[in-house]
Amino acid sequence: MPRVSGAGLSPALVDTRHEYGHVFSIYVPIAIGVFAVIVLVTAFALLRYTGRAPERAAQWRENNRLEGGYVTVLVLTVAFLLYLTFTAEHRVDTVANQQRPTVTIDVIGAKWEWTFAYRAYGITQRSGTVGRQPLVVPANQPVRFNLRTLDVIHAFWIPHVRYKHDLIPGSTQVSTLSFSKVGLFQGECAEFCGLRHADMLFDVRVLAPAQFQAWARSGGKAALT
Image 1 (cartoon, rainbow, N blue to C red):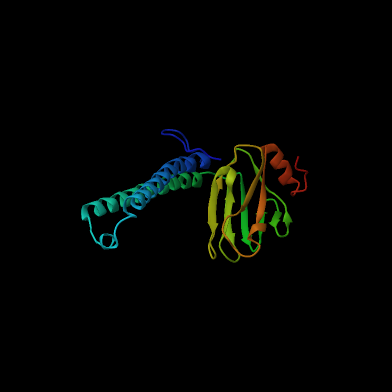
Image 2 (tube, rainbow, N blue to C red):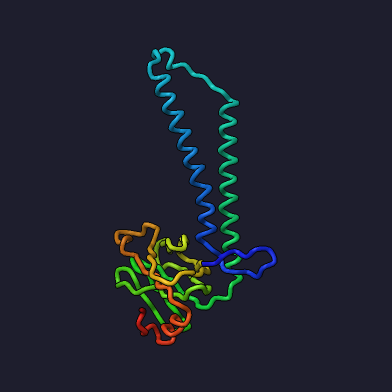
C-alpha cells in the first residue's frame, strides 16, 4: 500500500493503513470520551435525583450558557473530525492519482458476486456465489481499480489495507492502491446488498512482481503457489 511522500520527494504510494489508522486513533479516544461523559452524567442524575418528590421533579429550569457551551464544543469537535477525515482522504487521493499503474483491474459488483477483469491480459476472475477465484495483484506496485456496480450499492473492502470504497450505480470510481506484503488476504462487500450479501467474499492474492507477470502472461492459468 502507498505511503505519502514528504516535502521535496517524488510522489510515492499512499499508505492507507497509516493514513486511516491515524484518523482512527483520534476518532476512538474522542468517542470513548463522549461515551464516558454521557454515562457519568446519566449515572449522576439517576443517583442524585431519583428520590425527588414529584412536585420537585416536575420543575423546569434552563441554563443557556451551559447549553450553548455544550453545543459549541460539539460543533467544534465535528468540524475538527470532518477536517481530519477529508484531509486524509485528499492526501490519499492526490498521491494515488499521480501514479502510473502497473496493472488496471475493472472491479464489477453485482448481486451477489465480484468480477475482476484484467483487460490488458484478457483475464476474468469471479468470486462470490459463482465460486472463489482470487483477485491477483503484484506487491509494491501501483494497482488501479475501476470500481462499478451493475445493480445496487456494493462496497469494495479489503481490511488488510484498511480500504473500503462504495460502488455507486451509474458511475465509475477510480482508486489506486499498492500491497506491500506478499500473501493471501480476505476481501468482501461491506454494504448490505440483499439476501446473499454474506456470499460476496473474495481473496486477494498478492504475488511478487515477477510471479504476477508470469501469471498474467499465462492468461491466468499459471499455478498460484
